Image (cartoon, rainbow, N blue to C red):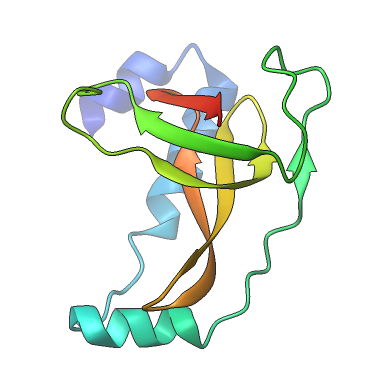
Length: 118
C-alpha cells in the first residue's frame, strides 16, 4: 500500500478516493443456501428507480423488451431477458419475473455486456 500512496501522490483527488474506498471496508456477508437467497429475493421489493438515458445510442426506452448478454463468451452464455429498467453509461438493469422468486430487477455493469432489443 505504501507504493500505491507514493504512486497516487500527484493525483490528490484519486488518492482521497482510494483512502475513502479503503476506509469503507468490504462489509460483512452471511452465508446462505440457494433456497434462502431465492426466498430473500421473493420477499424483497426493488428500490431501483427507473432511469433510461434518452441520449443513449441504442435508442431503447424504459420498458422495452431486451436481452443482456456477456461479451466475454457470447457463444456459450444465455442472454438474460426482461424489460429495460435502467440504462446509463455505467449500468443496465432489467425487470424480469421468475417462478422461483417473482419479480426482480437484475443489474449488470455496462462495460462487458451487450443490450439488445428483442
